[in-house]
Image (cartoon, rainbow, N blue to C red; front, side):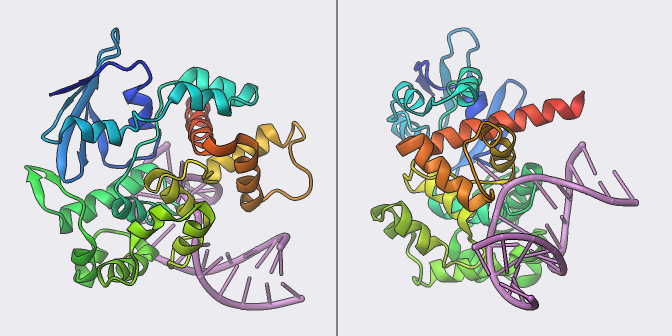
Amino acid sequence: MHSFSTADLNLDHTLDCGQVFRWEREGDRWVGVVNGEVVRAWQDSVSMEVLIDSNLPRDFFVDYFRLDDDLPYILDSIEKDRYIHEAIERYRGLRIIRQEPWECLVSYMLATASSIPTIKKRISLLSRMFGVEIEPGFYSFPDAGTLAHADVSDLCECKLGFRTGRIQKVAQMVSGGELCLDELFDMDYHLARKRLMEIEGVGEKVADCVLLFSFEKLDSFPVDTHVRQFVERYYADDGYFWGKLDTHKIGEWGRRYFGEFCGYAQEYLYYHRRIEQKRSNVT
DNA sequence: AGCCAGGCGGTCA
DNA sequence: TGACCGCATGGC
């Protein structure tokens, strides 16, 4: 059992914000599959102490939750206006998670034009079909070699739709050594992005997510439909843009406007927008 | 029932 | 380049 007392980690926001797809809430606890292990985590609502039940060592979670990031400093650096100010005020303690690159790449390739519950279902099916059963009902994420040699009819049962062929291809690239993900750590944002976008099924948005969540590129600003809508609704009206607005331009703006930690800004705005939209659907 | 979801790749002007 | 389209699937 591990315990973390930092005031700068909010477990609910961090696990619910949509960056990871392998965590579920079970009562007052979170249960997830991380690094081939089942992990259970919860947070005391008064002391804010985070408790973690896992076979993985304590240091793993320092890394996983990016407790090496100076969150107060980062949030201060991105707090440029009243919109991001409000998001930070509400969701302070949301931290970007360091994800395993292969799982992250496949997950976001599966995320195109899909809602989060659908993405979670696909990854769950894929793990159940091709992963290793760690505990009853819990399966590890399948490695590239397994997916590269997967039976096509088995793969089709995972309901990946038009993404099936892309997953098969990227698995073959990685397991065959044609694509070495670790090399992306040493590249800067732009070069690593260019390299990722050579993969079929990886455009600007998917590349930016993988760079942000796995390859230490906190200067990445993924523009999905929610972020685009938020920027169009608020920033565009305030005169931050002229000319035509597209996702590419919004990305360039976000990186320049929020600076070297724009990835954190993106995540706060994204979560903020999703929560707001969920609320407006209810009413 | 029809629109949209953490988009991408292709085409056509 | 800019606008549009098809792609599978599921949630709401």
